Length: 154
Length: 407
Image 1 (spheres, rainbow over the protein chains, first blue to last red):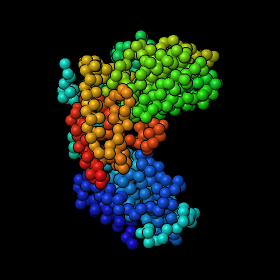
Image 2 (cartoon, rainbow over the protein chains, first blue to last red):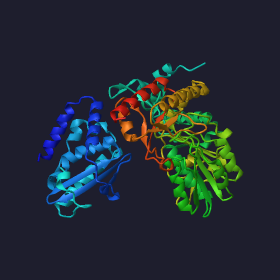
Image 3 (cartoon, rainbow over the protein chains, first blue to last red):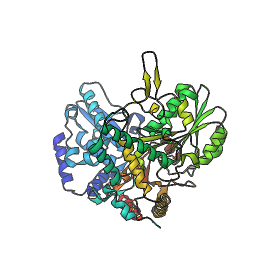
Protein backbone atom coordinates (compact mmCIF):
# COMPACT_ATOMS: atom_id res chain seq x y z
CA UNK A 1 0.00 0.00 0.00
CA UNK A 2 1.22 3.47 -0.84
CA UNK A 3 2.27 5.64 2.08
CA UNK A 4 0.24 8.58 3.35
CA UNK A 5 2.64 10.99 1.70
CA UNK A 6 2.58 9.14 -1.61
CA UNK A 7 -1.22 9.19 -1.64
CA UNK A 8 -1.24 12.89 -0.80
CA UNK A 9 1.18 13.55 -3.63
CA UNK A 10 -1.02 11.74 -6.08
CA UNK A 11 -4.07 13.75 -4.94
CA UNK A 12 -2.08 16.97 -5.38
CA UNK A 13 -1.14 15.82 -8.86
CA UNK A 14 -4.75 14.94 -9.73
CA UNK A 15 -5.85 18.41 -8.71
CA UNK A 16 -3.07 20.06 -10.70
CA UNK A 17 -4.72 18.75 -13.86
CA UNK A 18 -7.88 20.64 -12.91
CA UNK A 19 -7.01 24.34 -12.97
CA UNK A 20 -10.58 25.65 -12.76
CA UNK A 21 -12.43 25.52 -9.49
CA UNK A 22 -15.62 24.25 -10.99
CA UNK A 23 -13.62 21.32 -12.38
CA UNK A 24 -12.19 20.65 -8.95
CA UNK A 25 -15.61 20.68 -7.38
CA UNK A 26 -16.96 18.47 -10.13
CA UNK A 27 -14.13 16.05 -9.27
CA UNK A 28 -14.95 16.19 -5.54
CA UNK A 29 -18.63 15.60 -6.29
CA UNK A 30 -17.71 12.64 -8.46
CA UNK A 31 -15.54 11.20 -5.68
CA UNK A 32 -18.46 11.63 -3.30
CA UNK A 33 -20.88 9.98 -5.68
CA UNK A 34 -18.52 7.08 -6.31
CA UNK A 35 -17.83 6.40 -2.66
CA UNK A 36 -19.07 3.03 -1.57
CA UNK A 37 -22.35 3.40 0.33
CA UNK A 38 -21.95 3.24 4.07
CA UNK A 39 -23.65 0.32 5.78
CA UNK A 40 -26.80 1.58 7.48
CA UNK A 41 -25.55 0.27 10.84
CA UNK A 42 -22.65 2.72 10.72
CA UNK A 43 -24.91 5.73 10.30
CA UNK A 44 -25.30 5.80 14.05
CA UNK A 45 -25.46 8.65 16.50
CA UNK A 46 -22.01 7.68 17.84
CA UNK A 47 -20.49 8.08 14.39
CA UNK A 48 -21.87 11.56 13.71
CA UNK A 49 -19.39 14.40 13.26
CA UNK A 50 -21.32 17.60 13.36
CA UNK A 51 -20.34 20.42 11.09
CA UNK A 52 -22.25 23.65 11.27
CA UNK A 53 -23.94 22.96 7.95
CA UNK A 54 -23.54 19.33 7.05
CA UNK A 55 -23.52 16.04 8.86
CA UNK A 56 -20.75 13.47 8.48
CA UNK A 57 -20.81 9.89 9.66
CA UNK A 58 -17.37 8.55 10.40
CA UNK A 59 -16.93 4.91 11.31
CA UNK A 60 -13.50 4.08 12.69
CA UNK A 61 -11.83 0.85 13.44
CA UNK A 62 -8.54 -0.31 14.90
CA UNK A 63 -7.21 -3.65 13.68
CA UNK A 64 -3.76 -4.65 14.78
CA UNK A 65 -1.52 -1.67 14.17
CA UNK A 66 -3.77 -0.23 11.45
CA UNK A 67 -6.78 2.06 11.40
CA UNK A 68 -9.72 1.77 9.02
CA UNK A 69 -12.36 4.36 8.31
CA UNK A 70 -15.61 4.67 6.42
CA UNK A 71 -17.42 7.93 5.93
CA UNK A 72 -20.59 9.41 4.54
CA UNK A 73 -22.19 12.84 4.45
CA UNK A 74 -25.47 14.45 3.47
CA UNK A 75 -23.45 16.96 1.41
CA UNK A 76 -21.86 15.65 -1.77
CA UNK A 77 -18.94 18.07 -1.58
CA UNK A 78 -18.20 17.12 2.01
CA UNK A 79 -18.56 13.50 1.01
CA UNK A 80 -15.95 14.09 -1.69
CA UNK A 81 -13.62 15.62 0.90
CA UNK A 82 -14.27 12.67 3.18
CA UNK A 83 -13.43 10.36 0.28
CA UNK A 84 -10.03 12.04 0.00
CA UNK A 85 -9.44 11.55 3.72
CA UNK A 86 -10.39 7.89 3.39
CA UNK A 87 -7.92 7.49 0.52
CA UNK A 88 -5.18 9.04 2.62
CA UNK A 89 -5.83 7.44 5.98
CA UNK A 90 -7.89 4.27 5.81
CA UNK A 91 -5.81 1.13 6.09
CA UNK A 92 -2.67 3.01 7.18
CA UNK A 93 -0.62 2.23 10.29
CA UNK A 94 -2.07 4.10 13.29
CA UNK A 95 1.36 5.48 14.10
CA UNK A 96 1.63 7.07 10.63
CA UNK A 97 -1.91 8.44 10.73
CA UNK A 98 -1.31 10.00 14.10
CA UNK A 99 1.91 11.66 12.95
CA UNK A 100 0.75 12.55 9.45
CA UNK A 101 1.24 16.06 8.23
CA UNK A 102 -1.78 16.80 6.12
CA UNK A 103 -0.31 18.71 3.22
CA UNK A 104 -2.77 18.11 0.44
CA UNK A 105 -5.41 20.57 1.63
CA UNK A 106 -2.92 23.40 1.40
CA UNK A 107 -1.19 22.17 -1.74
CA UNK A 108 -4.46 21.82 -3.64
CA UNK A 109 -5.77 25.14 -2.31
CA UNK A 110 -8.78 23.33 -0.88
CA UNK A 111 -8.09 24.90 2.51
CA UNK A 112 -8.46 28.42 1.16
CA UNK A 113 -11.44 27.63 -0.93
CA UNK A 114 -13.40 25.93 1.77
CA UNK A 115 -12.53 28.93 3.85
CA UNK A 116 -14.64 28.27 6.88
CA UNK A 117 -13.74 24.66 7.39
CA UNK A 118 -15.72 24.51 10.57
CA UNK A 119 -18.85 24.85 8.44
CA UNK A 120 -18.27 21.52 6.80
CA UNK A 121 -16.93 19.50 9.70
CA UNK A 122 -13.70 18.76 7.88
CA UNK A 123 -11.40 19.84 10.68
CA UNK A 124 -13.50 17.88 13.14
CA UNK A 125 -13.14 14.79 10.93
CA UNK A 126 -9.36 15.12 10.80
CA UNK A 127 -9.15 15.62 14.55
CA UNK A 128 -11.23 12.54 15.21
CA UNK A 129 -9.21 10.45 12.76
CA UNK A 130 -5.90 11.46 14.29
CA UNK A 131 -6.97 11.15 17.90
CA UNK A 132 -8.49 7.76 17.11
CA UNK A 133 -5.18 6.72 15.57
CA UNK A 134 -3.40 7.80 18.76
CA UNK A 135 -5.73 5.70 20.87
CA UNK A 136 -5.40 2.73 18.51
CA UNK A 137 -1.64 2.99 18.66
CA UNK A 138 -1.75 2.97 22.46
CA UNK A 139 -4.10 0.02 22.52
CA UNK A 140 -6.91 2.08 24.05
CA UNK A 141 -9.69 1.38 21.53
CA UNK A 142 -11.22 -1.30 19.42
CA UNK A 143 -13.99 -1.15 16.84
CA UNK A 144 -16.70 1.37 17.58
CA UNK A 145 -19.23 -0.97 15.94
CA UNK A 146 -18.77 -4.48 14.54
CA UNK A 147 -15.56 -5.06 12.55
CA UNK A 148 -15.51 -4.33 8.85
CA UNK A 149 -14.35 -6.88 6.32
CA UNK A 150 -10.93 -5.73 5.30
CA UNK A 151 -11.86 -5.89 1.63
CA UNK A 152 -14.47 -3.13 2.09
CA UNK A 153 -12.11 -0.74 3.77
CA UNK A 154 -9.37 -0.48 1.23
CA UNK B 1 -38.57 59.33 -10.35
CA UNK B 2 -36.77 56.05 -10.23
CA UNK B 3 -33.35 55.89 -8.60
CA UNK B 4 -30.23 55.34 -10.66
CA UNK B 5 -28.92 52.01 -9.34
CA UNK B 6 -25.90 51.91 -11.62
CA UNK B 7 -24.79 55.20 -10.14
CA UNK B 8 -25.45 53.94 -6.61
CA UNK B 9 -23.31 50.86 -7.30
CA UNK B 10 -20.38 53.11 -8.16
CA UNK B 11 -20.53 54.48 -4.61
CA UNK B 12 -19.79 50.98 -3.20
CA UNK B 13 -16.22 50.14 -4.23
CA UNK B 14 -16.38 46.46 -3.31
CA UNK B 15 -19.20 45.81 -5.77
CA UNK B 16 -16.84 46.20 -8.70
CA UNK B 17 -14.37 43.55 -7.56
CA UNK B 18 -14.33 40.00 -8.79
CA UNK B 19 -14.45 36.78 -6.80
CA UNK B 20 -13.04 33.47 -8.01
CA UNK B 21 -12.39 35.15 -11.34
CA UNK B 22 -16.04 36.14 -11.75
CA UNK B 23 -17.71 39.50 -11.18
CA UNK B 24 -19.09 39.60 -7.64
CA UNK B 25 -22.83 39.09 -7.24
CA UNK B 26 -23.40 40.02 -3.63
CA UNK B 27 -26.65 38.58 -2.28
CA UNK B 28 -25.74 38.17 1.38
CA UNK B 29 -26.96 41.53 2.60
CA UNK B 30 -28.93 40.14 5.50
CA UNK B 31 -25.61 38.94 6.93
CA UNK B 32 -23.89 42.23 6.30
CA UNK B 33 -24.19 45.05 3.82
CA UNK B 34 -21.38 46.63 1.84
CA UNK B 35 -20.21 50.16 2.64
CA UNK B 36 -20.37 53.24 0.47
CA UNK B 37 -17.14 55.18 -0.02
CA UNK B 38 -18.50 57.97 2.20
CA UNK B 39 -18.60 55.58 5.18
CA UNK B 40 -15.08 54.34 4.49
CA UNK B 41 -13.91 57.96 4.14
CA UNK B 42 -15.56 58.99 7.42
CA UNK B 43 -13.71 56.23 9.26
CA UNK B 44 -10.38 57.05 7.63
CA UNK B 45 -10.94 60.75 8.29
CA UNK B 46 -11.53 60.08 11.98
CA UNK B 47 -8.33 58.09 12.42
CA UNK B 48 -6.33 60.39 10.16
CA UNK B 49 -7.44 63.72 11.52
CA UNK B 50 -9.08 63.70 14.93
CA UNK B 51 -8.69 60.35 16.72
CA UNK B 52 -8.98 61.05 20.42
CA UNK B 53 -10.80 59.80 23.50
CA UNK B 54 -14.11 61.49 24.07
CA UNK B 55 -16.29 63.17 26.70
CA UNK B 56 -13.53 63.87 29.23
CA UNK B 57 -10.86 65.48 27.10
CA UNK B 58 -9.74 69.04 27.57
CA UNK B 59 -8.00 69.31 24.26
CA UNK B 60 -9.01 70.22 20.74
CA UNK B 61 -8.97 66.74 19.21
CA UNK B 62 -11.04 65.34 22.03
CA UNK B 63 -13.61 68.06 21.47
CA UNK B 64 -13.74 67.29 17.75
CA UNK B 65 -14.16 63.57 18.39
CA UNK B 66 -16.82 64.14 21.06
CA UNK B 67 -18.72 66.46 18.78
CA UNK B 68 -18.68 63.98 15.89
CA UNK B 69 -19.63 61.06 18.14
CA UNK B 70 -22.56 62.95 19.64
CA UNK B 71 -23.64 64.43 16.31
CA UNK B 72 -23.84 60.83 15.10
CA UNK B 73 -26.21 60.04 17.97
CA UNK B 74 -28.40 62.87 16.77
CA UNK B 75 -28.37 61.65 13.16
CA UNK B 76 -29.39 58.18 14.31
CA UNK B 77 -32.08 59.61 16.57
CA UNK B 78 -33.55 61.49 13.62
CA UNK B 79 -33.42 58.43 11.34
CA UNK B 80 -35.59 56.36 13.69
CA UNK B 81 -37.50 59.41 14.94
CA UNK B 82 -36.74 58.97 18.63
CA UNK B 83 -37.75 61.84 20.90
CA UNK B 84 -34.36 62.46 22.46
CA UNK B 85 -30.70 61.81 21.79
CA UNK B 86 -30.46 60.33 25.30
CA UNK B 87 -32.77 57.51 24.23
CA UNK B 88 -30.08 56.30 21.81
CA UNK B 89 -27.64 53.89 23.49
CA UNK B 90 -24.60 52.71 21.56
CA UNK B 91 -23.86 48.99 21.79
CA UNK B 92 -21.69 46.52 19.91
CA UNK B 93 -24.64 45.38 17.86
CA UNK B 94 -28.20 44.12 18.03
CA UNK B 95 -27.16 41.14 20.13
CA UNK B 96 -25.62 43.28 22.83
CA UNK B 97 -28.59 45.67 22.75
CA UNK B 98 -30.99 42.79 23.38
CA UNK B 99 -28.77 41.33 26.10
CA UNK B 100 -28.67 44.73 27.76
CA UNK B 101 -32.46 44.93 27.90
CA UNK B 102 -32.90 41.29 28.90
CA UNK B 103 -30.45 41.83 31.74
CA UNK B 104 -31.39 45.29 33.04
CA UNK B 105 -35.13 45.15 32.35
CA UNK B 106 -35.24 41.63 33.73
CA UNK B 107 -33.48 42.66 36.91
CA UNK B 108 -35.82 45.61 37.43
CA UNK B 109 -39.18 44.24 36.36
CA UNK B 110 -39.31 40.48 35.97
CA UNK B 111 -40.24 38.44 39.04
CA UNK B 112 -40.64 34.70 39.55
CA UNK B 113 -43.81 33.50 37.85
CA UNK B 114 -43.85 36.41 35.38
CA UNK B 115 -43.87 35.70 31.67
CA UNK B 116 -41.72 36.69 28.73
CA UNK B 117 -42.85 36.08 25.16
CA UNK B 118 -40.76 35.69 22.03
CA UNK B 119 -41.65 34.14 18.69
CA UNK B 120 -40.53 31.08 16.80
CA UNK B 121 -39.34 33.41 14.03
CA UNK B 122 -36.54 34.91 16.11
CA UNK B 123 -32.84 34.92 15.46
CA UNK B 124 -31.04 33.15 18.32
CA UNK B 125 -29.95 36.62 19.45
CA UNK B 126 -33.53 37.53 20.27
CA UNK B 127 -34.31 34.15 21.76
CA UNK B 128 -31.44 32.94 23.93
CA UNK B 129 -30.96 36.17 25.98
CA UNK B 130 -34.63 35.99 27.03
CA UNK B 131 -34.41 32.30 27.78
CA UNK B 132 -31.36 33.02 29.97
CA UNK B 133 -33.14 35.90 31.67
CA UNK B 134 -36.18 33.73 32.41
CA UNK B 135 -33.93 31.14 34.00
CA UNK B 136 -32.28 33.82 36.14
CA UNK B 137 -35.48 35.49 37.20
CA UNK B 138 -37.58 32.34 37.55
CA UNK B 139 -39.96 33.55 34.85
CA UNK B 140 -41.82 31.52 32.24
CA UNK B 141 -40.57 31.62 28.67
CA UNK B 142 -43.26 31.47 26.01
CA UNK B 143 -42.79 31.08 22.28
CA UNK B 144 -45.42 32.08 19.71
CA UNK B 145 -45.33 29.86 16.60
CA UNK B 146 -45.68 30.76 12.94
CA UNK B 147 -47.89 29.17 10.31
CA UNK B 148 -46.99 27.29 7.11
CA UNK B 149 -46.50 30.56 5.23
CA UNK B 150 -44.10 32.01 7.76
CA UNK B 151 -46.65 34.38 9.31
CA UNK B 152 -46.87 34.64 13.08
CA UNK B 153 -49.98 33.13 14.62
CA UNK B 154 -51.37 36.36 15.99
CA UNK B 155 -54.33 34.60 17.61
CA UNK B 156 -51.89 32.51 19.65
CA UNK B 157 -49.96 35.65 20.54
CA UNK B 158 -53.13 37.38 21.69
CA UNK B 159 -54.04 34.42 23.89
CA UNK B 160 -50.49 34.19 25.27
CA UNK B 161 -50.46 37.79 26.46
CA UNK B 162 -51.77 38.19 29.98
CA UNK B 163 -51.32 40.26 33.11
CA UNK B 164 -48.15 38.32 33.98
CA UNK B 165 -46.49 39.15 30.65
CA UNK B 166 -43.70 41.63 31.34
CA UNK B 167 -42.14 41.90 27.92
CA UNK B 168 -42.64 40.70 24.36
CA UNK B 169 -39.63 40.54 22.03
CA UNK B 170 -40.04 39.98 18.30
CA UNK B 171 -38.32 40.82 15.06
CA UNK B 172 -39.92 43.26 12.67
CA UNK B 173 -38.44 41.23 9.80
CA UNK B 174 -37.36 37.59 10.03
CA UNK B 175 -33.72 37.14 9.01
CA UNK B 176 -34.46 33.63 7.81
CA UNK B 177 -37.63 34.08 5.79
CA UNK B 178 -38.03 37.82 5.24
CA UNK B 179 -41.47 37.83 6.86
CA UNK B 180 -42.53 41.35 7.83
CA UNK B 181 -44.42 41.11 11.08
CA UNK B 182 -47.29 43.56 11.60
CA UNK B 183 -45.31 45.41 14.27
CA UNK B 184 -47.78 48.17 15.05
CA UNK B 185 -50.61 45.74 15.57
CA UNK B 186 -48.45 43.41 17.69
CA UNK B 187 -47.13 46.27 19.83
CA UNK B 188 -50.65 47.56 20.48
CA UNK B 189 -51.75 44.07 21.46
CA UNK B 190 -48.89 43.79 23.94
CA UNK B 191 -49.46 47.27 25.34
CA UNK B 192 -53.16 46.53 25.84
CA UNK B 193 -52.05 43.58 27.98
CA UNK B 194 -49.66 45.82 29.91
CA UNK B 195 -46.46 44.33 28.48
CA UNK B 196 -43.42 46.23 27.23
CA UNK B 197 -42.12 45.44 23.74
CA UNK B 198 -38.66 45.07 22.24
CA UNK B 199 -38.44 45.16 18.45
CA UNK B 200 -35.44 43.45 16.86
CA UNK B 201 -34.99 45.74 13.88
CA UNK B 202 -31.74 44.24 12.59
CA UNK B 203 -33.39 43.23 9.31
CA UNK B 204 -36.02 45.97 9.09
CA UNK B 205 -34.43 49.33 9.86
CA UNK B 206 -32.75 49.41 6.42
CA UNK B 207 -35.66 48.00 4.44
CA UNK B 208 -39.02 49.20 5.76
CA UNK B 209 -40.66 51.76 8.03
CA UNK B 210 -38.49 52.55 11.07
CA UNK B 211 -40.25 55.26 13.06
CA UNK B 212 -40.06 54.18 16.70
CA UNK B 213 -42.70 56.67 17.83
CA UNK B 214 -45.14 55.61 15.17
CA UNK B 215 -44.51 51.94 16.06
CA UNK B 216 -44.69 52.88 19.75
CA UNK B 217 -41.84 50.45 20.48
CA UNK B 218 -40.49 50.49 24.03
CA UNK B 219 -37.14 49.17 22.84
CA UNK B 220 -35.77 48.97 19.32
CA UNK B 221 -32.42 47.40 18.44
CA UNK B 222 -30.35 47.27 15.28
CA UNK B 223 -26.80 46.81 13.98
CA UNK B 224 -24.76 49.36 12.07
CA UNK B 225 -23.18 46.86 9.70
CA UNK B 226 -26.51 45.73 8.28
CA UNK B 227 -27.42 49.29 7.32
CA UNK B 228 -24.28 50.10 5.30
CA UNK B 229 -22.28 51.17 8.37
CA UNK B 230 -19.30 49.55 10.11
CA UNK B 231 -19.32 46.42 12.26
CA UNK B 232 -19.02 46.67 16.01
CA UNK B 233 -21.61 49.40 16.43
CA UNK B 234 -25.23 48.82 17.28
CA UNK B 235 -28.06 50.92 18.56
CA UNK B 236 -30.51 50.41 21.35
CA UNK B 237 -33.39 52.83 21.42
CA UNK B 238 -35.37 52.79 24.64
CA UNK B 239 -38.16 54.99 25.87
CA UNK B 240 -36.70 57.27 28.50
CA UNK B 241 -39.13 56.11 31.19
CA UNK B 242 -37.85 52.53 30.87
CA UNK B 243 -34.17 53.39 30.56
CA UNK B 244 -34.41 55.63 33.62
CA UNK B 245 -35.97 52.86 35.67
CA UNK B 246 -33.47 50.19 34.63
CA UNK B 247 -30.18 49.53 36.44
CA UNK B 248 -26.91 49.84 34.47
CA UNK B 249 -25.85 46.82 32.41
CA UNK B 250 -22.10 47.05 32.99
CA UNK B 251 -19.96 49.05 35.39
CA UNK B 252 -16.84 51.03 34.57
CA UNK B 253 -15.76 54.36 33.20
CA UNK B 254 -18.17 56.70 31.39
CA UNK B 255 -21.23 55.26 33.14
CA UNK B 256 -20.48 56.74 36.57
CA UNK B 257 -21.32 60.03 38.20
CA UNK B 258 -19.45 59.78 41.53
CA UNK B 259 -17.46 56.84 42.83
CA UNK B 260 -16.53 56.29 46.42
CA UNK B 261 -15.83 53.31 48.63
CA UNK B 262 -19.30 53.62 50.13
CA UNK B 263 -21.39 54.19 47.04
CA UNK B 264 -21.28 54.86 43.34
CA UNK B 265 -23.83 57.01 41.59
CA UNK B 266 -24.51 56.63 37.91
CA UNK B 267 -24.23 58.98 35.02
CA UNK B 268 -27.32 60.25 33.24
CA UNK B 269 -28.71 58.76 30.04
CA UNK B 270 -27.43 57.61 27.64
CA UNK B 271 -24.03 57.25 29.35
CA UNK B 272 -25.43 55.16 32.21
CA UNK B 273 -25.54 52.28 29.70
CA UNK B 274 -22.24 52.99 27.96
CA UNK B 275 -19.51 51.73 30.29
CA UNK B 276 -15.90 52.11 29.21
CA UNK B 277 -14.38 53.95 26.28
CA UNK B 278 -16.96 53.41 23.57
CA UNK B 279 -16.50 52.50 19.96
CA UNK B 280 -15.84 56.13 19.07
CA UNK B 281 -15.63 55.84 15.32
CA UNK B 282 -18.49 53.33 14.98
CA UNK B 283 -21.31 55.84 15.34
CA UNK B 284 -19.45 58.26 13.08
CA UNK B 285 -19.35 55.60 10.36
CA UNK B 286 -22.96 54.65 10.99
CA UNK B 287 -24.08 58.27 10.76
CA UNK B 288 -22.23 58.56 7.45
CA UNK B 289 -24.22 55.53 6.25
CA UNK B 290 -27.49 57.12 7.31
CA UNK B 291 -26.47 60.39 5.66
CA UNK B 292 -25.85 58.37 2.51
CA UNK B 293 -29.32 56.81 2.65
CA UNK B 294 -30.79 60.24 3.31
CA UNK B 295 -29.46 61.40 -0.07
CA UNK B 296 -32.29 59.39 -1.58
CA UNK B 297 -36.01 59.14 -1.20
CA UNK B 298 -36.31 56.09 1.07
CA UNK B 299 -39.57 54.96 -0.53
CA UNK B 300 -37.91 54.91 -3.94
CA UNK B 301 -35.00 52.84 -2.66
CA UNK B 302 -37.45 50.35 -1.19
CA UNK B 303 -39.64 50.30 -4.29
CA UNK B 304 -36.54 49.33 -6.26
CA UNK B 305 -35.62 46.60 -3.75
CA UNK B 306 -39.14 45.21 -3.87
CA UNK B 307 -39.08 45.24 -7.64
CA UNK B 308 -35.89 43.16 -7.68
CA UNK B 309 -37.32 40.89 -4.97
CA UNK B 310 -40.45 40.17 -7.00
CA UNK B 311 -38.32 39.46 -10.03
CA UNK B 312 -36.28 37.08 -7.89
CA UNK B 313 -39.36 35.18 -6.74
CA UNK B 314 -40.55 34.94 -10.31
CA UNK B 315 -37.27 33.71 -11.78
CA UNK B 316 -36.37 31.31 -8.97
CA UNK B 317 -39.78 29.68 -8.97
CA UNK B 318 -39.22 28.77 -12.62
CA UNK B 319 -36.38 26.43 -11.59
CA UNK B 320 -37.44 22.78 -11.42
CA UNK B 321 -37.56 21.38 -7.91
CA UNK B 322 -36.81 24.73 -6.27
CA UNK B 323 -38.90 25.34 -3.18
CA UNK B 324 -39.29 28.83 -1.76
CA UNK B 325 -39.92 29.15 1.97
CA UNK B 326 -40.55 32.92 2.01
CA UNK B 327 -44.30 33.07 1.55
CA UNK B 328 -45.56 35.44 4.23
CA UNK B 329 -48.35 37.95 3.57
CA UNK B 330 -45.82 40.73 3.54
CA UNK B 331 -42.12 40.24 3.14
CA UNK B 332 -38.99 42.07 2.22
CA UNK B 333 -35.50 41.60 0.83
CA UNK B 334 -35.03 37.89 1.57
CA UNK B 335 -35.66 34.73 -0.45
CA UNK B 336 -35.09 31.46 1.37
CA UNK B 337 -35.11 28.31 -0.71
CA UNK B 338 -33.86 24.79 -1.27
CA UNK B 339 -33.68 22.55 -4.31
CA UNK B 340 -35.11 19.08 -3.93
CA UNK B 341 -32.41 16.46 -3.35
CA UNK B 342 -29.63 19.04 -3.12
CA UNK B 343 -27.78 19.91 0.07
CA UNK B 344 -27.81 23.66 0.74
CA UNK B 345 -24.09 23.64 1.49
CA UNK B 346 -23.28 22.08 -1.89
CA UNK B 347 -25.42 24.63 -3.68
CA UNK B 348 -23.94 27.56 -1.73
CA UNK B 349 -20.39 26.35 -2.36
CA UNK B 350 -20.95 25.99 -6.10
CA UNK B 351 -22.58 29.43 -6.25
CA UNK B 352 -19.49 30.85 -4.56
CA UNK B 353 -17.20 29.42 -7.23
CA UNK B 354 -19.26 31.42 -9.71
CA UNK B 355 -18.88 34.67 -7.77
CA UNK B 356 -22.36 34.56 -6.24
CA UNK B 357 -22.39 35.19 -2.49
CA UNK B 358 -25.39 33.81 -0.61
CA UNK B 359 -25.82 32.37 2.84
CA UNK B 360 -26.53 28.73 3.57
CA UNK B 361 -27.35 26.92 6.78
CA UNK B 362 -29.77 27.51 9.61
CA UNK B 363 -29.15 31.29 9.73
CA UNK B 364 -29.03 31.20 13.53
CA UNK B 365 -32.70 30.31 13.58
CA UNK B 366 -32.81 26.63 14.45
CA UNK B 367 -36.40 26.79 15.75
CA UNK B 368 -37.49 27.96 12.28
CA UNK B 369 -35.57 25.17 10.56
CA UNK B 370 -37.14 22.64 12.93
CA UNK B 371 -40.59 24.01 12.15
CA UNK B 372 -39.88 23.84 8.40
CA UNK B 373 -38.47 20.33 8.80
CA UNK B 374 -35.16 21.18 7.11
CA UNK B 375 -31.52 21.29 8.21
CA UNK B 376 -30.95 24.56 6.46
CA UNK B 377 -31.76 26.69 3.47
CA UNK B 378 -30.07 28.84 0.87
CA UNK B 379 -30.80 32.51 1.49
CA UNK B 380 -30.43 35.28 -1.06
CA UNK B 381 -30.84 38.69 0.52
CA UNK B 382 -31.01 42.05 -1.19
CA UNK B 383 -29.92 45.61 -0.67
CA UNK B 384 -30.88 48.63 -2.75
CA UNK B 385 -27.73 48.27 -4.86
CA UNK B 386 -28.86 44.91 -6.20
CA UNK B 387 -30.33 44.68 -9.67
CA UNK B 388 -32.36 42.28 -11.76
CA UNK B 389 -29.11 41.34 -13.41
CA UNK B 390 -27.87 40.05 -10.01
CA UNK B 391 -30.94 37.79 -9.96
CA UNK B 392 -30.13 36.61 -13.48
CA UNK B 393 -26.59 35.76 -12.35
CA UNK B 394 -27.98 33.87 -9.36
CA UNK B 395 -30.38 31.89 -11.51
CA UNK B 396 -27.70 31.03 -14.08
CA UNK B 397 -25.32 29.98 -11.30
CA UNK B 398 -27.98 27.77 -9.68
CA UNK B 399 -28.67 26.08 -13.00
CA UNK B 400 -24.99 25.38 -13.55
CA UNK B 401 -24.59 24.11 -9.97
CA UNK B 402 -27.54 21.76 -10.37
CA UNK B 403 -25.99 20.36 -13.51
CA UNK B 404 -22.73 19.75 -11.63
CA UNK B 405 -24.64 18.02 -8.86
CA UNK B 406 -26.25 15.71 -11.37
CA UNK B 407 -29.69 17.35 -11.53
